[in-house]
Amino acid sequence: MLIRTAPSLTNQVYQAVLDEICDGMLAPGTQLVQEQLADRFGVSRQPIQQAMALLKADGLVEETGRRGMRVVPLDIALMRHHYEIRASLDRLAVRRTAERFACDPALAREAERRSAKVLDAGNRAVCAVKVREQIRHDEAFHALFYEFSGNPLLSRTAEPHWRFLRRVMGEVLRHAAPADAIWREHAGILEAILAGEAAKAEALAVTHIERAADALADALKDRPAEDGTVMQDRSA
Image: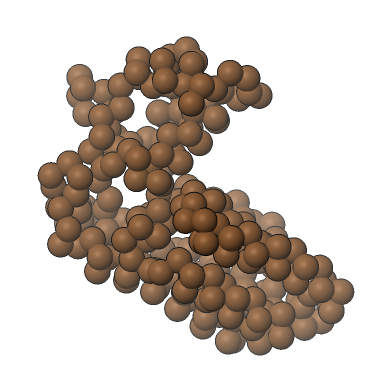
């Protein structure tokens, strides 16, 4: 894939490499050589360097001395820490959203219309087995409730965790939770929110996140990583 024009070549390279990590095309432990990436994407080394810096900040790649950068092996403990924080944020988002919808039917109707489109797009991505599209629609679904919660800080607070979890979600979809089950859970969360059932929506949202974390940990904890190491636990 050649990247020819863009308002930000760095962001395009970042997204292209992220997509390949999420899709499993760039497996854990894969060496990332800047010159090769520049040739493959048709860009200079500067946006490659800048994209690598962003990916490193997100915990997706790491330096390997003179060998450059590599895709970081998945850290199960770190994954759980991110999911734990996201569960707290989503819990607040769905509770506030459900409370607002109970008082504002017009707002609820607008959210129902927009979320129905996301649910449809997500289910079509599942049928087409397009992992990166499933990830994007999944993020869009949850982002709706950050928006409709009325708290503008929720989305900004969640973004650093989503950057890490985009890669994790790719692993979930390839190795753990059935993709169609994820979207059925989304539909259940939405139904509770639209009904103004805040406590039920909270419980469903937290269970949704915990189930994904548990399924991935169970699927990967004893599976050798592609670079020959066991999936890492860096909490020790």
